[in-house]
Length: 374
Image (cartoon, rainbow, N blue to C red):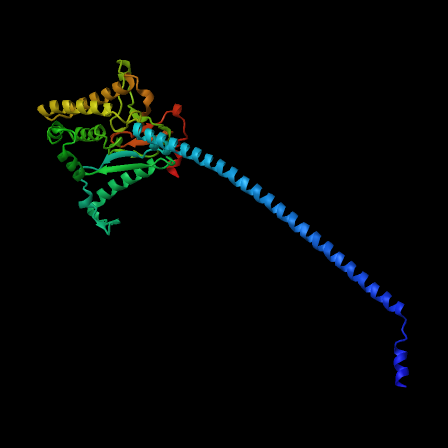
C-alpha cells in the first residue's frame, strides 16, 4: 500500500513543470531589464544635472568677476569725485570764508537793531525794581517811569506788528547805560568833553548820543523819546534805510528853502556793511564841532535851535542832494490834529499839533489809520 501511494505522487507530467519554470525566469529577466533601464535613466539625469550645475557655477563665477571689475572701477571713480569735491570746498572756504554763510542764510533777514532812550529822570533799576526778575513793583512814585516803559514796549510791539519774519531788537537807554557809554569813550575824548558840558542843551546831548551809537555801529537805527511808533514799515525797506522829510512852510518854500530831514527818526541802509557808516560819522563830526562852539558861547535856546537846523540840513544834503535817496524810504512829516492815512509814527514833541511820519503811496503797502482804533 505504501508503495502504491508513493508511485501515485510522482504521476505529474514533466512538461508542465518545465513550462512553469521557464515562465518564472522570463518574468525575472524583464524586471531586471526594467530596473536596469531606470538606473541608467536616473544616472543620466544625475549626470545632466551635474553638468547644468557646473554651467551655472561657471556663469556665476564669470558674473562675479565682471561685477568685481565694474565695482572696482565705480569705487575708484567715486573716490576721485569725492576728492575733487573736498578740494573744491576747501579752496572756496580758504578764498571766500563767508560764501557758505551767505548760501545757507540767503532767505534770512538780519535782525534790525534800534535804540531809543528814556527820559533823563528815569532810572530803571532805581524806579522799577524787579520782583523775582519778572514783575516791577508799581508805586505812585514811579508812575512816570511806568508810562515811559509802556511807551517803549508799545513802540517795540508796533515795530514787529506787520514785519512778518523780520525780527527787531529795541534797546532803550537810561541814564545809567548812557553813563557807561560815555565813560568808555567809544566816540573819542572830544565827544566826552562836549557831552559832559553844562552849556549845551539836552536835545544836543541826545543827538550826540544817538549819532555816536550809529557811527560806532552799536545800533543801525534810533528814534527819540518823543516818538511813538504806531506801525511798522520794515517789510518795505528791502535793505534801504528810513529818513523823515520835515514839513516845509509856505514862507520857507517861497524863499528857496531846500529842505531838512528830521533827526528824531533814522534807520541806516544795509547797502555796505564793510565800511563805516559815513553819514552818521559826518553828522557826529558836525555835532561835536558845533557843540564846541555852543559850549564857548552862553547857553541860549536860539543857538540850539539854529544848530539843530544845521544838522537837519546837513542830513538832507547827504541823502537827497548827493543823490542817495534811492537807498532810503523817505517818510513825510505831516503836522495836524487827526492822524493821516499811512502814518507809521507820531512825534509828540510839538506844542501845537502832533507831527505824524507818513509813508508815501509810491512805496506801496496797506497802511490804514483805522487799524489803530481796533
